[in-house]
Image (tube, rainbow, N blue to C red; front, side, top):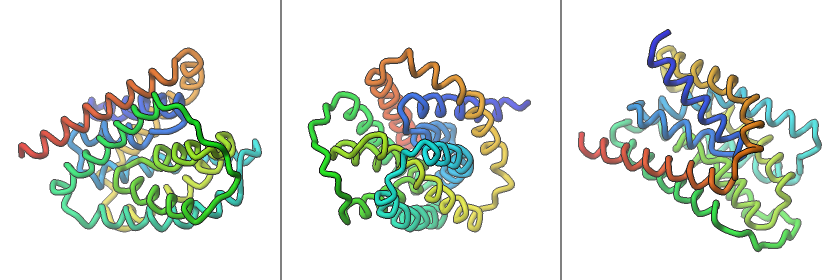
Length: 251
């Protein structure tokens, strides 16, 4: 087995452990790692989302069976998320990878800082029980950022809604359910615009690593302090993003 393939398996494994512990950041984490390995932004984001179609489908179905879905929230998020994700994926494949890479790394740098911020912020908002047009706008922005940055749907959408006081269980379930459709739309766009035969090792590696980590992540989560882990993950994303920006600017 090639050493490069093992790296992709490791990336999928680590990203899945992070996502299992935090309930988010699979895409942000894995895309940051892939960019730091030198992959073009479109290839990295496409590979992450192709792998995520499986994981988000399983997660969304599980939340549906458990009754964790707020259908009014899904209605507000799903279509705007798909539109934003499709637009972001198309834009990403239309721009030279070397030109956009430092900007993508800059976005991931901000995501890392945001995760660190969320680790130490106390939520003092009160749930108002309503879903306004701002939720649809949030879905649009979240989908666009998710496609462009290879991840961000969870950190942007879930954390914002929970911070506004929305019910955490229903929010996480609804956002995860909607994420499958957003990820699927992004993946279709990537398939139609990229030559995917050269990325099969990345996709397979991410899937294999995630499958190995999935049953372990739940057990690991019980023993890890979540705030400390969020701070650690955020710091790692920041450092890797800074490295990617530096290497891109030095070329």
